[in-house]
Image 1 (cartoon, each protein chain N blue to C red):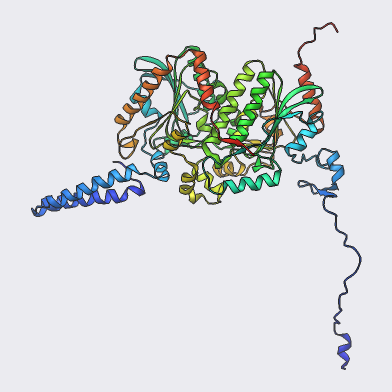
Image 2 (image 1 turned 120 degrees about the vertical axis):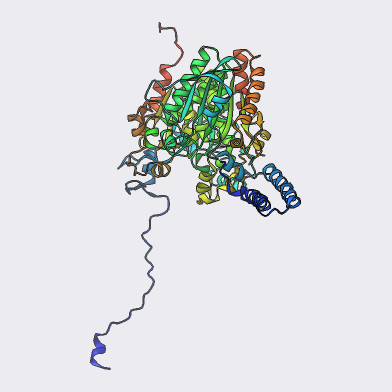
Length: 287
Length: 319
């Protein structure tokens, strides 16, 4: 053994330790996608999925939204099992539909039905971004139209929560025509005195924004929600400029006169109840 | 001079050969008449075959042909006494949409259409036929006027889509389109919409809620341009031809889906070959459908239009 060997770097064997890894059990904690703040999932749920640090409004699926907004959930759901028939036989569409159904536990991107808010009976339709990015094809258009027609028939207020990536390209012209169909149904309903409250949530874009979502007697939105017609990338390519960060946010739309009010999720239910109360049939005045 | 499309090259090559042969025959004094007759026969056959079996992608090229007649061309050929009216009374006059009063077969109508430019300068002024909100709002103002004075509304659809720009978003592009869709459902006058070139997305539909929607033989109509669909679906805009096929964008497709009521034939080789003949064919179709609609009362017209769009959609109940 030479003397320099005494100073050579020794190799150590690693022995696996029995100590449990300090990993966060899945589902217990949650990281805010906007500010990175880590909070308990239970706390986040209690806070209606709004980040306690930066106020980021997390996306809700249709079931979560309904649980949050209606008194006792949906009393009667309409056409729960309505599904697409792939009318154009579009390459890859049928399998994508199956995949989306499994992922979201829904048959398409709209859940609709009757329920109560603050005791007021309403017809409600809620879009779910977790099904096919909330895109509108024949099924979504038909379910929205039927909801409008039912509200018309029963003379009930109509509330639609929108969230959508836009048109369902795989249904091309059928998808486009749903914009006309839903808007025409609203013309009848609103022309007959019907009350329609539209709530635009993150994100609402394309053909949904350019039809029923923009046609509320009152257009509300959640803070920070992306609301617009064309996509940011397309616009940047067209005008060859970078767009500001706040472009197409709810606040941007409010500033440009496109919304009545931006409402924090915590106050959404009470705001809707107040609006419904303002339109409640008069009880005769001398109570 | 008609500029040719890539798929038309074999035909023009053959035509060139015939011309060459003819001049050679003249120069050298040799009789090629037999050969020329054979070639001309083949040329005619090729032309017939080619234009009778156009693929969706080829129709897309014809629909976008820069020499294709525009709304103003049809207005000039089909109507008389056209008075163009400008502005939305809110912000500006959008040149991507033209409109005004005119007479059709002697009767006053309101006519509105998307307007592409005829050259680069014109195209820049008209945003290549892609309207801003003020364009849709001008159209709405003219339609409300037509409804008030009980005039039929004729619209020509020819746009890649609403203008995708920051200023358009700021001024409420979505709201402008949505409002047109809703309001067009309420008018008690006949509305006839003719897709003359490209019908792209909500920007097309915003002039498209009619009792009758007609398409020129080679016109296309889709929820997004095939180029846009290809780049979103497959991250590859160069696969537009494939998307054109898959999206079923042709007049024949849309007639079979009962989305449109009629197809207006085009001269062989496309609408740009003969403006006069094409305009006569469009006028004939408008006259036919207008005569039917003029028999209806305002209430019937509204209900007819509602039912037309109400029935569109394909779905089923899962087991």
